[in-house]
Length: 409
Image (cartoon, rainbow, N blue to C red; front, side, top):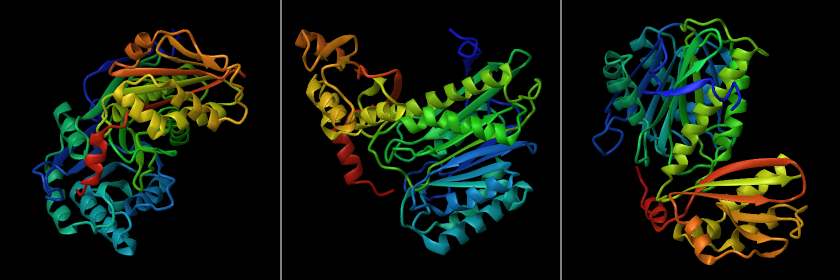
């Protein structure tokens, strides 16, 4: 285990685990269910912030607002609603963001440029602004630094999620400690592209914005950008990390051991949260890790892994536990022009199913057992080079169809 890998340990909590953060949630009535649907997250001091957003060319109004706010610097708070995406709502959608951001700024004693705004829910419906304007002051009065407040914030951002997704780490920088925490949401419409679903990360580290942005982008690329549930990129994907700088530790500088440790912990946090999304995929019964090794390039490895992860034939086989390895092998072969089947090997768990262009000498019972668990690991060795990539996905069940055929927040 490297120093970077050994530098963190899990601790309780989410967005309020680090020093300097308060959270709150309330019910505005955007959702039909009697649950919280508005959350506020506030940094008590002016720290630094970095963010990534969807690359979907159909982009929600809050994403357009938040991109500009983050670029100008000065983000100190995030306001998020669930139940309505405020996407495909034209100029009115942007005006509604401005109106609610101003209301939140007034309630928090900030200015609108301090507010990152995020929304999740159904597309194409105008935001019920009056409900938000009534709920924002209520949430502002409830802001608290407790772990319970962070948990309530995490619940308020959920849509079809069935479980709360949050995690926190204590990271040893070598000279002092920092805490990182976060929460995420998502169970469907998951195929991130340089972003996430909605994800809110916090830390009390002292770190400049350019370095924090670089680290976040690298962490996202190896975690959130490597998961898929239904190969559908959202209009609202947003990930923000806020750094309060209140930890009793030296500033993190580029190229140092402390920077390497912090980035490793950030990647671990993002990885845990991203895998929680896949585990909770709509209708999912299995978490599937697809390791592609022996590729000529990382791009080739990713193409093969994604081809398997996004194939309905592969995902239905994973649901039933049917070790129909031909589906996986052929999906990968179609995605990689340089693949030579005489050099390739495919295995389920530790059981080799295919090698040298033909079926391996594996017992069907052993393959079926390797496919039967809650977590399934597939490994495709292309036998061509040294590059590799990992993608996480889930199975495709009848419940996924039921959820999405009937979905209307």
